Figure 1 (cartoon, helix red, strand yellow):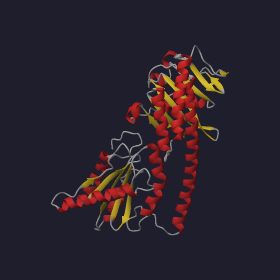
Figure 2: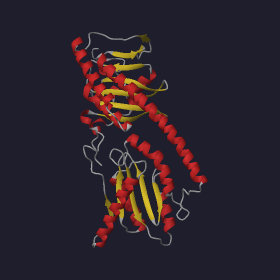
Figure 3: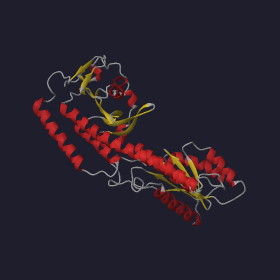
Figure 4: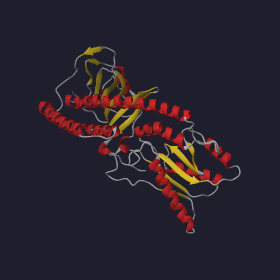
Length: 382
């Protein structure tokens, strides 16, 4: 297909003018000729076969590997998976050249051509050059984001579209059938994987309801009667739902722990501080005068600002802090925050030792050192 060719490929074709056509719409000879198409097709099949032979312990690895494969073999600027939610489309996974996610910061999929894919979910949308095609000349994907070439395939769950797999480029492209087939194949694979994950999420949610009911029936307090703050039991229930979403979105969670000795008004002060936090944050009473601060979607700089405010109110104390990282082991495998809590406790001990040696017992941070073996193909700045 020459740059500028606009095609929906599958059981039917659909042009932006609204007139449906059936079959495969092409214009002109295939890019690179029959020999080039054959060579590219063989390369793509080999890459798919290697991916099929691999074993992925986590769905994030499957999606990351598949998106990187698309970026490498199709030589595009971005590959992205977007899912349908109540507000439209939300980016879930993305990749850019070199496997560096920072080079592929996800654009708002609602501004790309992805909504047009969902308008004709029985087909794959192929655009060679949006800038040269009058049908797309005013589209924000081209005008605002600079996307000129695009392939978008629907992701289906029980026959219903639940998202879009797309590849996007800033330069015009003459897409061949081999490139479109590669995107379609990965869309089918991702759709099945997401279907399995959706079923697992439903089962997990049902189990969480049962666990919560059991906790109430067994009189396991979710709120400390002494401080009125959430307890360890509440934290466990929170982790079951929140960590799954954080892993999917690749969001870090800041944690800090410390001992707060009893004093007059301590409980009310803690409740006031808890009330000043965001709705997603937690201040947990871990028992025996130990408290844990949990700050989702917060990096070190943001956590230090909150801790500074806490320390001004509660007084100086040794604090251990760390970041839960969904890309690094052991955090990415653990069902709870326990590995991160252990790191924070170790950092707190280091702060206490520094205070015992005459230094200031302040906030001590620790982290998992990123390594090539530990990362899921992502550059990590945490």
